[in-house]
Length: 465
Image (cartoon, one colour):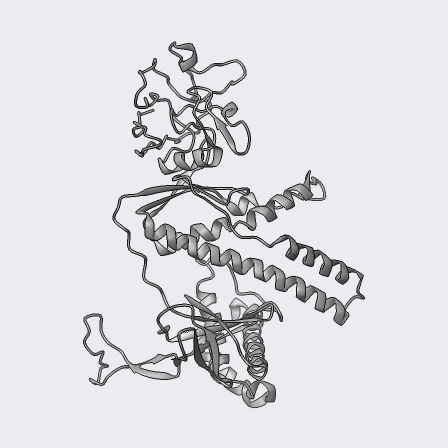
């Protein structure tokens, strides 16, 4: 999906807001119609029948009839697709759309162009005539600007941030916090692998957004101190203003504009970082995190209220501000089949040099000192190295890997230190130690040991449980 910032004139913006209102009105009519449709009445009306009903409604309703018919029909088509995909999309039944929240409409191309087969030959219909397809009318103005034809608005300019013009059959216009965007329905080609065999691991956090296994630390841009002070200023003014007043709406609009700026920076960072990872690495491994569960509210219920709700809410905001899910999603879309998830348990406690796991090795948020071999590294970088090597999850009993330049120590059934206060590392004791962990390992859990160099050490050799 190619998305660009639009810069309409005031008259064009007013007309596009009217298109948004018409599309939202037709969508809500379809939602209400299907909500009152009972199984005893037979099948609910489909797209074709709703289009006939829309034609009759346009004749009777002057406000609806003054709008563009294509925009209103595309709203019905969007509803039909959402209805068909309600079981596989994860969003469920189509719901009611609200003003100032769902502002947008879809436009189908008006230009006619010949269609061709995959082999390059002309596409013919049953009568042997050339099949003509729709195309969006787009013109380039110069290196930075282009324009697209919107029904009822004429040519509307948008900022061209890519070298080539978009070639699509439909496009969608959206408005959010006073900013207009146009998104052309194009499925971009995946980024090819560089072919260097490079594997990189990424550990995501709040202090450091993405710590890479090669030592780089990437941080998602946030609002500046001055911008945060402006948000607090507008929020105080809105709290003191009378309810439902113009002053209150103006102050909240200013807050929304600043927060939209932060969201735009986060999305831009996610796009650029995911493109960099897809172009420079053959395999990208992420620490497997369930962001939805991690950011769940802790308020609980009236019978069982939660504890430290305000602290958990602050942590949730800090996690969501880092764009963890966006980075993982866009990397998978740009490099399909080259992104893997590594289980998160013990990736931050495992030493990337010797493989010993001890919670006392994690001295602080940023400091990691192995209690067995004394290896020192940044904690996030150490975790990313383990992620790159595929070392994650609950380890099964097996032999300890031997780094280069070290003598093989007595066999250890598992590198997990379950009692750090009273149990020393076998490298410190120099004797055979056997741990019985069958009661601690879930049924079906296995250790995933994949080869990968870490600070000059050979790949981990997996041993069967």
